[in-house]
Length: 426
Image (cartoon, rainbow, N blue to C red; front, side, top):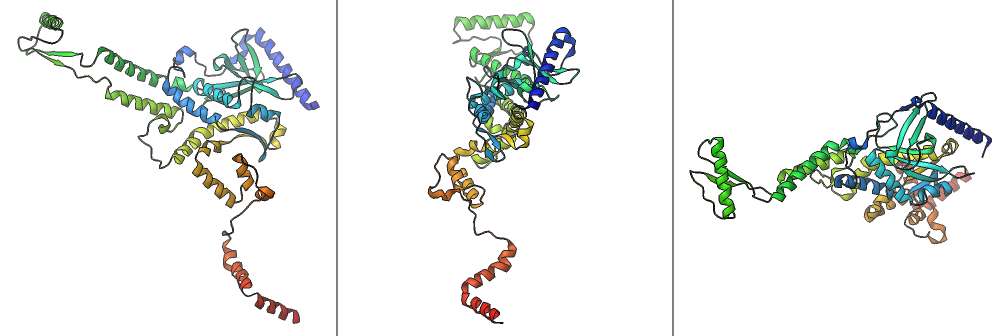
């Protein structure tokens, strides 16, 4: 540890200790700045009881977790303890895949995801990242220093405070730059309306199809006459078990044809899927709505998902990891974390083969690099480590002026030798 880093650490610890003392003595110094809403106001729609929320969150979180993350220095991968922690096992009980899947599930439901950096005695960097329950974390601004702290309320024990330096935090979308807005709270009215329509349809189904009957009378009836007509009808209906109905005075009975599944229910479900897709920035076809799909191939649909949905999310995670896990000197040297978004397309063999083919012909990948990406050994003799380039490409000036001279020299080598000898004699 350098002397400068030692004093910076001591200064940070003194600030935290002073802040904790201030928080205990003068709670009014703490200022809540997040758009925090109690859970009971946001509604009881979670991954466990909303299939649409589950579908949207699972698609995004599974896609993020399927992208391998790697620490780079420039374009070269770095193999050290920090990279091993992030890309293999961020904590004692999670793989990297499960870690980022859980983080994204928290972010896409509560609006925020948090991971606390844990340091070991004598370690220069964090040794693990522990995921926190978003409902147990609140942002706080210290009025004097204007620094950001996080109030953490564990299941057991008292609330404690940590500086933002020790927290990896990625919000969904924010209006103040700190706390995220829960997409579930945004969708509360939409999901509640959909549930009400489904409950109404289920109620009609339980009552039975064609269970309602309309009685038509030839003239207006008074209240007593209406009651008497209904009573006579029900008495006859019960006696005959609904098989024979005797109606008098021109009264007719008609059964209401009610479908067990109302056609309006499909329209409501389609609108709900569309709204969920809009809030999560998902293409509608990924939520089962194929009415507006205009792409001719699966690859184009996947590219839309990667560009519009996953790229902003991946960028947010990469920048937060760079900011919280890498020091300023390391970032200046070119160190950075990067998710491999190409891994999602690796299932499309035809597309990947075309990409690799163009990469070799354009010399931005070597054959050995492509073979390594597919877990294949390098070509024997080291011939695959050299970059190749297509010879059918050249500048216009070379094609018009220089290439004819080269071809002419190859066709008439004797003429060129004679001209060279004559020049020498002169």
